[in-house]
Image (cartoon, rainbow, N blue to C red):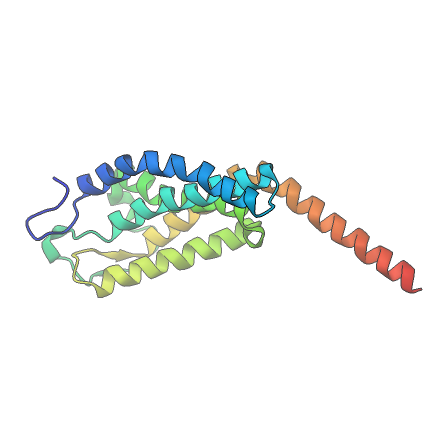
Length: 193
């Protein structure tokens, strides 16, 4: 069932819509790359950026939607758990892995696409902020969810781990760019002396 009696999406509905959206996501990559190429972007960069953008959206939006679905029939709405590591023991493997994966696509592909995210700390801060925003929404909306600091820790930690896994694809480019900027700066200083 995609929606329940009250008209809200169900977990099954989000999964089904995610699977149904896969062909559109796959087709979006070459379309975006072709548009970028028409604007003068080199093919490798056009493909890399297009793939990263689609992967960030396709890999993040369904997980965020799942966290904002109604749960527990509103019984626990407004509850907050602020003690770190307290809820992890009751989550089970599906909850732990799910929380680690919510921002994993952002953590993996974000640094590849956005030079400003080419630091594990920046990814950690971005994912932590996004996760805290979700937890605040879960607290404020009457959706029967518990807001937990453990969710923030796991969400941000998963994004940071994913950014470490993608490090070979973004670190080299970042290092080359910084070295190139330093050489240009040295040349400018030498020319003005």
